[in-house]
Image 1 (cartoon, rainbow, N blue to C red):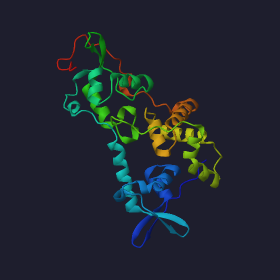
Image 2 (cartoon, helix red, strand yellow):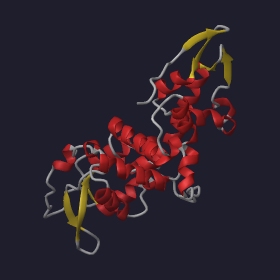
Image 3 (cartoon, rainbow, N blue to C red):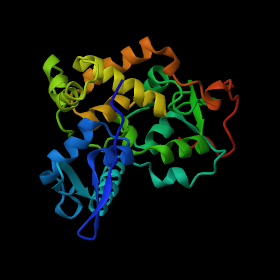
Image 4 (spheres, rainbow, N blue to C red):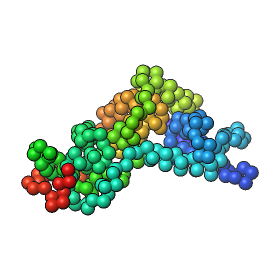
Length: 278
């Protein structure tokens, strides 16, 4: 069992300062993530930088207000990396029906295959089609309510950043998925467990534990591996493996189908009066 947090807050020179456990409790971050925020503080914009530590009676403390400012910036920076939809989408009436091709264009996806991949690999993440309408060649293709697409776009945040949510253009190279990369990324957390009497775990076991905890808190979503890789470090491929193991070993972690998933898609024999906006 992981050691319970011991958050501390005190006044120093008229300022409120907090310890690392307070930061973890406030943000929900792991020990490794909280340590990494401080480790890379020199890479952060100076005006939004993580506060430097102050040693008080053998414990590291951090300026509370400076940390709050840093964390606010950090959350906004993550959200800014999400590719937002074309403003045209939010100008549509909620009941208008659009084809899968048009839905992909409005959401900024590279092609309709992004939507199909979400539906096949991650049921419940993307809205279910409301039926089918004729495509450009006359073949019937899936169609979606504009209101469902608008709701999907509004809930996209940096916490659920996936390949389809990245800005277009070159992306930073992904870390090579060598076995030691995950261990290196989780080294701080593994050392912390060993030093505090926690049950010894391998990097793979600790990653699965983090994946299980994340799914229990917020449910599974398709960009969870990206989120965990960003939060803890390590290759996304390794986190995908950890998530698969978490879902296999703890099947109750799989989120129940949403109300939208439970609707039976019906085929539309004729396009909506205003819906065929291909």
